[in-house]
Image 1 (tube, rainbow, N blue to C red):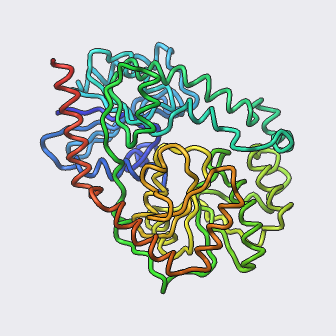
Image 2 (cartoon, rainbow, N blue to C red):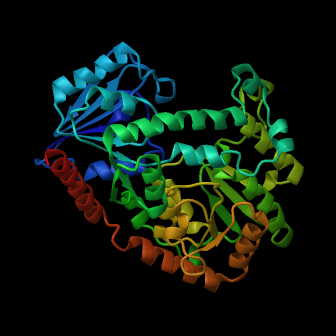
Length: 425
């Protein structure tokens, strides 16, 4: 079986093709999912994405070919450009895929590929739903906060937070078109399935969880190795990740536990930035910097910058609490990773999260807007280590069950076969 994977981001050997160094946490599930196909003679896989290159770049290793196509990065890709469409014609002619797997609807190059290869059966893995992101994008920010977040860069590029929300809403129309071109979607939960069926009632829904890297299975949270009063969160580069709400909660936690520290992965510190740096900063970054100052939290924060999956697992295994303050999530891979490690987790009850994090069973949950309750949950776990241990152990047990890479590989392959059978029928 020849499978064409279309991804939004470079990962694994695609990093090499693009001349990018190292590894970060973005796309770790793709590495894990691809691992099950590498060396398997029953499959040939082409992993393709787009970027700033003048020519098609290919790297073949065994049964996997990595392909970088011209057209610019996904956010700047022109899906109706004739040159870009011809690149997908080249992919079809040279690779001749039996099936196309599009990883996500967030960008338009997947749409271009499906439009060119209409006769090839396809399936879409739903990562983030644009219409839901648009609905919750402002994430509880008041009008005053939105006005205060306007940065020089935003004005220059006409790209402030409310315009970003409108961009997501506009792009959700193309998301619907992608679903109509395929009619097959892979989801993790009923919440996502319900949205997909509203968008396109003709969708056939398949269920399969994302594969998680072995780094997280190899770690186990224990009370003995915990850094007391430490909180770790998800990456927080834009409003729906809810860092502003977590900072408001942190200010309350610090009053009860003055030694509390929040560790933020994926982001560089907005503090101490030069004047030139501030001219380039996004409005949300400006808002976060100002909020840190207003709440007096600078000494309670550590911005970790980009992290490898091993570094993320180490942080999760030693944090006192893992917090997910997002205003919307389909299936947060970072939360799942933390639960697998066994970290005591507090998460906003949004999107698909309540389908696997159950309050007071394997974690604690709260309404996104209620940062006061988020603070109370964190403080409670600080004060009651045995409760934290119980929740963490149950989180690890519940998330490891049925989520082994072998189990999920078999699920994904069966979905491919079902899609091909439906097309043949």
